[in-house]
Structure formats: structure tokens, C-alpha cells
Amino acid sequence: MSNQPVRVLFVCLGNICRSPTAHGVFEQMVRERGLHERIEIDSCGTGDWHIGHPADRRAAAAAARRGYDLSHLRARQVIPADFDAFDYVLAMDAQNLADLEAMRPAHFDGVLSLFLDFAQQVAEREVPDPYYGGEDGFDHVLDLVENASAGLLREILGADTAR
Image (cartoon, rainbow, N blue to C red; front, side, top):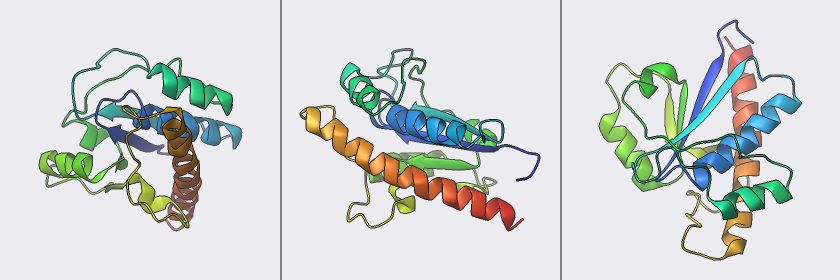
């Protein structure tokens, strides 16, 4: 990999369910492969309702059952400067992607896409918001996030070796 870290930002609506789950899963995957000094990870929301709050207790509990720790994460709102700071800005759903595209500066040359674009063999294109559903929705989010995280890591490692 190059000397410059690759920076990844996961984005959902409130930054308490889907994007912190992606943050925690991808962070652990990166750490387990010894790449934590080469890949930097953050998450945020397009909305401002939960700024400073920890991950939703149900998201944190579902993640913990699979060995992921979300306790250190706090919600923040996306800002225009994020486009200067991150190489990958990955939205959990089409509405978040549209909101990000509306604020995307013309000079941004990174990847702005749906996170599930990196998943393999899934019919879904969006990570569904589990906030108003049952506990099984959080497990489904984890399934999708684990799949897409593996694909994203392959993409980053492949793109870096191609440089």
C-alpha cells in the first residue's frame, strides 16, 4: 500500500445504527489484518438529531454478539470538508447518497457510492434502516455490512496495488 492512508467514511441518516455498525465491522476487519495504520475509518449521518450520542443500544448489542465493539463511537453530522478528507464516502441508502451528491464538491475525485456496491451476491442495493423494526433487522444489517466490508477491503487492497 502507498504511504498515504486510505480514508473511508460510512454515512447513514442519524449515525446511530447502520453507519456505526459498518464503522465497527470494517474497523475490526482492518485491525485483524494489521492494516489499521493504513486505512482510517469514520462514520457520520446526514441528519443532526443524534450528534454526540452513542450507537443505538440494539445496534451495539447485535454487534457485540458478533464480537464487534461500537462503544467508542459517537454520532456526528457529515460536513462539506469530509469530501476533502475521505477517499471513499459510502452511503447506506439511496436517499443518503442523493443528499451526499447534492453537497459533493466538483473537485472530489474519490468514490461516492452505495456501500452495498461492494457486496457480493446480495439482491439488495441499500442497507435497510433497522431503527423502527425488530431485533432481527439489526442482524440483517450486520450480514450485509460484513459482506460489503469484505468486498470494500478487497477493492481497497486491489486499487492500492494497481497504483
